[in-house]
Length: 304
Image (cartoon, rainbow, N blue to C red; front, side, top):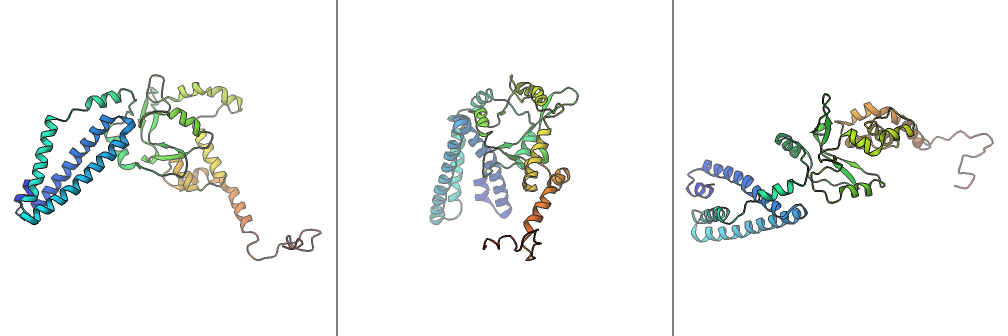
């Protein structure tokens, strides 16, 4: 990128703006490629270390260069001396990339050979990366859901799609499930399926039913028509019936709004109306009606 030369010869601010645009393109392509190369070299287990070293080296270099260009500007003027250092860096980087840097594509292919692919197109990956939160904090253990596996109505062929509302979400885990999920997750890398098919790839509903003896289980509990999707409704019903915040349940289910959740499950929290009434009772200052055989309101007889 001829950024240093554009800044050296710039006759007006338009050239400076153009140079900054080219600098942004360079940052997006060259720097991103550098990060990917380092991750390819270290493998999945040390990606955090590679990113940390990469960022530390980058910011140290920026600080050192700022000090050097400041000195050059003070001694030799604003142009062209400070920008000649940038031109030297560009030439050095091009030379090292051509003569010394190794191609890491083989490392990437080797790693990809041990994992299953999501089946997402480039456009879907872009949409997911744009919409989904890449770093989240939750107060407990949970599953981070980022993809949905659907079956074609005609052939039953599986395909990967985005989640409801095109947003990733976290589903909390009860304590009994945490060790089971930990065992299944094991050493799996990012992007691998938690439960995969025998030959790799996503697990179909039919395979999963056979593995857990679904037909036997639903007959044993006396609900032979129970569907797997009904478990989702059961979970929502239990949460709302136990007094969970509808907004929280909406986030877990992936509904577009809490209004949609309440339209589907609002009848389950009618009991909460009477619970609320009982909580308000006794706070208005009105005296309660005394029961048969009582001469004082409850509490006064015990001196409370």
